[in-house]
Image (cartoon, rainbow, N blue to C red; front, top):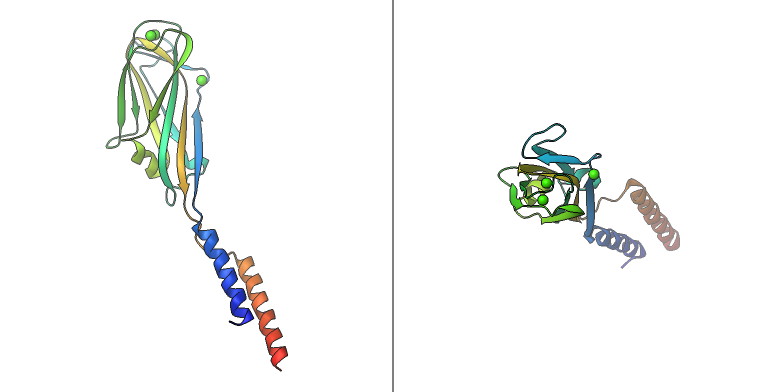
Length: 188
Ligand SMILES: [Ca+2]
Ligand SMILES: [Ca+2]
Ligand SMILES: [Ca+2]
C-alpha cells in the first residue's frame, strides 16, 4: 500500500470511529412556580381546581429528529400544610392517545413535602415525539399545594454523521498532495 493510501485509510478510520460513538446522557428540566400553587377541589380566592405546565427537553439538548428517548421520570412534589384533610386528586401526564393518568387519595398532612415519582410509560411517546410533556394536576376534593416538578430523561444522542468539516478535508487534501509531491520528486 502506498504511503498516500495508508494515510488516507488512517484518516477514514478515524472518521468511522467518531461516527460510531452514540452516548447516553441525562437531561433534566425543573418547573418550580414561585409562589407555589394551591390546587383546590372547591374554588376559593387564590386557588385553582386544575394547574397545567409543560416540561420541555427540546430546550435542554434533546433533538427529537435524531435522538432516542430511552426513559423518563417525572417527580412531582406537593405539600398539604394549610387545609389539612383527606383529598382526592389526579395527575395527568401527556395528551391522548398517550395520556398517563393516575388517581390518588390523600397527601400526608404537615410540613414535610411528599414526592410522587412517576416513570413515563404510556406517556413516553408523547415526550419522545417533540420533547414536550404537558402535565395537569387536578384536585377533585380537598386541596394541596404544588411545589415543583422535575423531569429526568435518559437520551441516546444520535451518532454523529461522518461529515468531515471543511477544515479537516482541506488539511487532509493538503497532506495527500504533499505526499504525492514527495513521491513524484523521489521517482523523478
Ligand atoms: Ca391531606
Ligand atoms: Ca389539604
Ligand atoms: Ca415552587
